[in-house]
Amino acid sequence: MCYIVYTIHVCNHWIPQPQPDNGPILRICEEAEKLRLGHPCPETQREHKVVNRSQGMCTGCLWKNVSK
Image (spheres, rainbow, N blue to C red):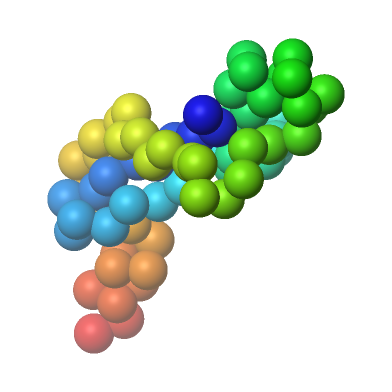
Protein backbone atom coordinates (compact mmCIF):
# COMPACT_ATOMS: atom_id res chain seq x y z
CA MET A 1 0.00 0.00 0.00
CA CYS A 2 1.46 3.34 -1.04
CA TYR A 3 1.61 5.98 1.67
CA ILE A 4 1.95 9.68 2.40
CA VAL A 5 4.30 10.85 5.17
CA TYR A 6 3.30 13.80 7.38
CA THR A 7 4.81 16.05 10.04
CA ILE A 8 2.38 17.02 12.82
CA HIS A 9 2.86 20.47 14.38
CA VAL A 10 1.81 21.85 17.79
CA CYS A 11 -1.14 23.58 16.09
CA ASN A 12 -2.39 20.03 15.20
CA HIS A 13 -1.97 20.55 11.44
CA TRP A 14 -0.61 17.65 9.41
CA ILE A 15 1.79 18.86 6.70
CA PRO A 16 2.84 16.42 3.93
CA GLN A 17 6.56 15.81 3.89
CA PRO A 18 8.20 15.55 0.45
CA GLN A 19 10.99 13.10 -0.20
CA PRO A 20 14.60 14.32 -0.28
CA ASP A 21 15.62 16.09 -3.51
CA ASN A 22 12.09 17.56 -3.88
CA GLY A 23 10.53 14.22 -4.74
CA PRO A 24 6.80 13.56 -4.69
CA ILE A 25 4.82 13.52 -1.48
CA LEU A 26 3.42 10.07 -2.29
CA ARG A 27 5.75 7.19 -1.42
CA ILE A 28 5.58 4.16 -3.68
CA CYS A 29 5.43 0.81 -1.86
CA GLU A 30 7.45 -2.25 -2.90
CA GLU A 31 4.34 -4.01 -4.20
CA ALA A 32 3.51 -1.11 -6.53
CA GLU A 33 7.14 -0.90 -7.63
CA LYS A 34 7.18 -4.59 -8.63
CA LEU A 35 3.62 -5.36 -9.74
CA ARG A 36 2.55 -1.96 -11.12
CA LEU A 37 5.91 -1.07 -12.71
CA GLY A 38 6.37 2.01 -10.54
CA HIS A 39 2.79 3.30 -10.77
CA PRO A 40 1.14 4.05 -7.38
CA CYS A 41 -1.69 2.05 -5.85
CA PRO A 42 -5.23 3.39 -6.43
CA GLU A 43 -6.18 6.42 -4.33
CA THR A 44 -8.49 4.30 -2.17
CA GLN A 45 -5.54 2.18 -1.04
CA ARG A 46 -3.24 4.82 0.44
CA GLU A 47 -2.05 5.01 4.01
CA HIS A 48 -1.33 8.22 5.93
CA LYS A 49 1.59 8.12 8.39
CA VAL A 50 2.82 10.72 10.89
CA VAL A 51 6.55 10.18 11.18
CA ASN A 52 7.73 13.51 12.63
CA ARG A 53 6.45 15.77 15.38
CA SER A 54 7.40 19.42 15.26
CA GLN A 55 7.60 21.62 18.35
CA GLY A 56 6.76 24.64 16.20
CA MET A 57 3.69 25.81 14.31
CA CYS A 58 3.00 25.20 10.64
CA THR A 59 3.82 28.05 8.26
CA GLY A 60 0.20 29.22 7.95
CA CYS A 61 -0.38 29.44 11.71
CA LEU A 62 3.01 31.07 12.24
CA TRP A 63 2.18 33.85 9.76
CA LYS A 64 -1.24 34.37 11.34
CA ASN A 65 0.37 34.88 14.77
CA VAL A 66 3.18 37.10 13.45
CA SER A 67 0.89 39.38 11.42
CA LYS A 68 -1.58 40.09 14.26
